[in-house]
Image 1 (cartoon, rainbow, N blue to C red):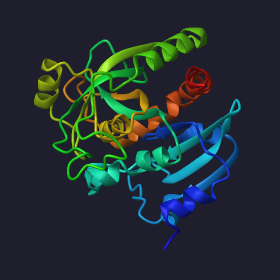
Image 2: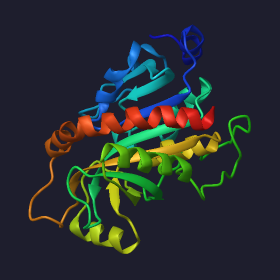
Image 3: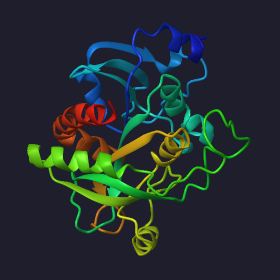
Image 4: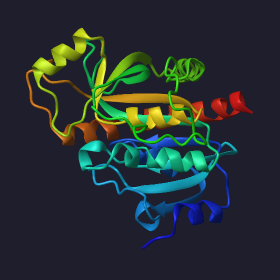
Length: 271
């Protein structure tokens, strides 16, 4: 049995300012941190394990351009059998470290026909269709309000920072609405037509519970989706997870360059 979360937090040499959550096949950014310290989730009592392919399952601490960062290389998903509160555990843990700025990344299916495989899209808003919420049950008022506002779940200012950084790096960034479904199966063509009709540009199986937890704590969120495949029915081909991982590898360097430019700017914004 590993040490408790509190023991882990108390033993850490740094108090990170920014938390970065890395999705399927997108964990390369963690390797860019200097003075890196890695703690497998298995060594922290109560931390849900990442079982999804492409999720390393470790807490990575280090610095980038003088900014102390905590990276979650891998996340928990509802489809793995975890409760909504367990899915939000990692974000709660970083909140306990004092993190109030989060950057989430994920792999997503493209619904918007303007997107292409490999596109990076800033999430401007979301639609929660997972049938679950990490805030259900008794509320801990010391963590956040019973009824948190979600009118700007994804910080407009952080999106502006990312767009400006993207322009300078010649990395095109679009904005869109992310629909979160339970999974683990990919959606049917009829479901994709429904999602497009209700205003979704992207679809995935993560991120939304974590963003809800971040907002509950009063933290700000930036989320970047990598369009790893076009959603069902858009192209005349089936979807498999290897395509998701392959596209993650394909855009890895572009995403890392963007994150390396965005992190210090967000830190400066909050200093």
